[in-house]
Image 1: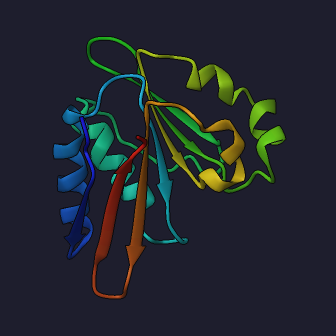
Image 2 (image 1 turned 180 degrees about the vertical axis):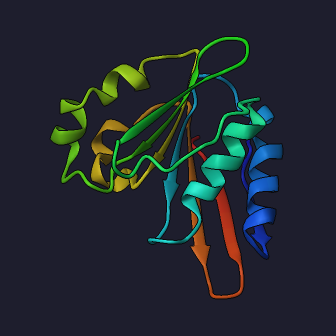
Length: 145
């Protein structure tokens, strides 16, 4: 099933709402690669997506902790991972990213995936490209085929 689409969100609230509505359509075990410049809205998308999975606790940026784990109401986790502070795939492997990626009952939302791109080659992968143009965010979703 393809989830491919493009959407324009005029503000952060629309980004949150879109991601929250999108989340229930995505199967467990999916790796979501969030691409975009600094400040594009990757964390906002992740926040909305995780809320859409039923998480009620505050969703914060993992920039300094690298990973935030959110238990899902029924089973599994939403792992919000930020590779911004890492140099390459070796460093990502060093903190144990493969353990998160192998959890098929959970979701992985990964910001700055280009810092570990060699590790992300799975059939359950969705690339999400977010671009802020000064007026709003253009979000392009591309499922791996």
